[in-house]
Length: 285
Ligand SMILES: C[S@@+](CC[C@H](N)C(=O)[O-])C[C@H]1O[C@@H](n2cnc3c(N)ncnc32)[C@H](O)[C@@H]1O
Image: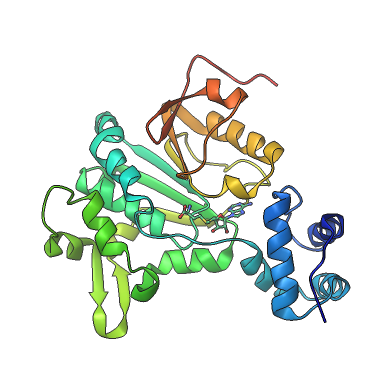
């Protein structure tokens, strides 16, 4: 018995049903990605699409669980270390002039990106004056992020990446690493030290639904490896919001393989891995 669906239009019908019966709206996710994810759910749960529809209408707990499976949560500490080193050694230096540094991690997954950045802010003496909000759609990921405790075997690169970013010119410095992380080798656990968690507000926010309200403008917005899962029109709406929510000269940091095209190229100035808000333009709709 095959559970897979060949036709994207059938999957889109399912997404409309999911939207009707839950708070989740995946209708504007990119066809290729959502096609793969829904088919994976069908195969893993041994369900036909009709059965998936029925469960979605009647079982809200089931819906919460499959949302964990639909979203791609892959992340790591100092993912793409070259970028983090550039932020640390170059792009974040002007933030030292600010009284308060406001940072938003949009699509923070289980928090490794947030804590990587907090290490950098701490090394630069900026952490105490930083206010950080970290958001995701996925409640399970947010719970893990708040806890800040990770299996080392799934985060094997942490020490190498840490050294590549922070200790680039020095030999591995265990004392420096231990300042931020407690490595319990016997339990295979890496714990983020409490002070790195203190000024982070982890909260649920759905980028599809709209603005992140009641926050000041941000000096830095991270949205790494999230927009690739969305179609072009949803990407545009979100990028417009990011532009509005950045301070003048604020920085947008996307994933290593993500960029801006067309219209948005004029709204941001690219400098290495950073897209700087171009103040000469305001959106008019
Ligand atoms: C691949 S992870 C990226 C994590 C991290 N930014 C990084 O680059 O390592 C993508 C994250 O985006 C989140 N996400 C997907 N759709 C979202 C939405 N509509 N609103 C907010 N977050 C979303 C997923 O739950 C997932 O945690």
